[in-house]
Image (cartoon, rainbow, N blue to C red; front, side):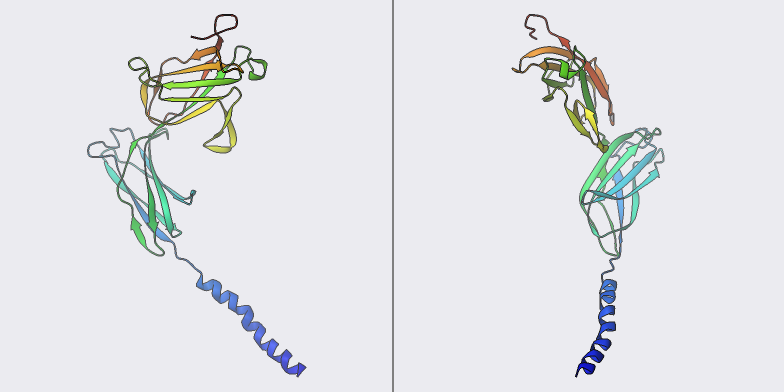
Length: 251
């Protein structure tokens, strides 16, 4: 009896060993292709927008899967970029138009773009608009370092169209030594505050106020008039000066 059992096992083991391999072969998934269609709109061209290169990027669950760039002929108002060999799934697609220096000027995106297994699909037309501005604002206290200053927090105000309207549209109040993650490098920290998705504007002012432990404004500073163009990502430092009075108080 023992001999017959051993013989049966000996015959069964090779088949069991091959079974997982056959199953793995059945799991092969064929990639698909996606044609990304883009447009400047009805009248603009690559030349009129100073664009020389257009790049399409495909993201699956937040991870970049593929990026392709193509030159942009001066008279072109629209085009298409092929992203091939993509894993099937639902994608977010981003299109960026850049100038000769590589600066992104115009941007567009589309979500829920399906890539089918072994198939070819295309996006609807993605219209490119001015790329938003990203602004990093830093400051320095009268004593140099936050730790040596009575300033505990800083209030930063962003004012577009400063000479005509003068209305605060964005503001942040943070610790004097505040740091934020760099959007371009998650391992790097930026000092100050970061304003994102700002509309390009040629008449911008930044005001900053230093607050003491009671929340009272005791120091202030302001930027010069800023010209923020599409795709700009500047860093502006504002020196804070102590307000007059004893104790100091800002109007």
